[in-house]
Length: 142
Image: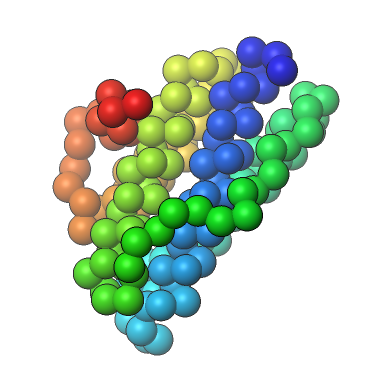
């Protein structure tokens, strides 16, 4: 795999995981709740981002990594747990996009910066706190 494809493939894998978790959280969230509305919006955004990344990997001659059959997720039966799970999704996505910013150039980097900023805003939706350098705390924990 070329050096150009590796960070893009990592981002595709991250988006697959985000979509899976957000789908479960959304299904468990009470109808007409702020949580469901926010998770639905986040899900649509992550799906669009995943599709962009898949197209980019394909355009570079790669085969996008497939989604895993399942992902680890704790109990999300309460709204508090749903908010926590969605926040974790956005924190992990921010780390993926911070890594993509660090390992790409040009339009890929610009796109990743925009995605990182959007993840940072969504963290606030899910009861996160502002960070000076979003995504870097997850990178430090790897």
